[in-house]
Image (cartoon, rainbow, N blue to C red; front, side):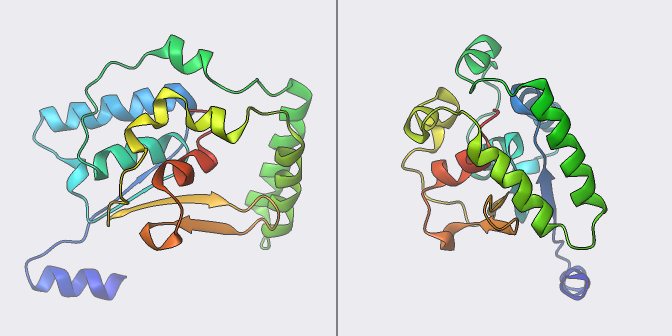
Length: 182
């Protein structure tokens, strides 16, 4: 990648990537506010050559890549009301400990698979109910933007999964895969 960037710079072009993380409804609102604030200063983050997002960042990144407005007010009451049931605090302690082990491990996949087993056992709303939430409405039926990727972790194997236009998944389903807390 460094060589490509150097070559691009030599031709007077720049390769730019935008990476957006998670954070649920609050993270999504913060990212949207940041994007709008920078746009007000003439900085268009949606013009990045590559936009990568996970969870809330996948929602915001896809909106940017689709050139859809981010200036609509965030309806927190709707976002929280349509969110899946909360995770019990005991489960969060187990989850947090496993996440720390994975982050510190030279081989995080088996630990991520342990986390995935917890996720697969968790009580959640159905996929159809999740997709029908307002947060995913802008993506239904949309073609994948070429510069957009979303990253998830396979709950069974613990391996990272990159979703893009070649993945064969509808955009709204790939975004929803890890955006259950948005």
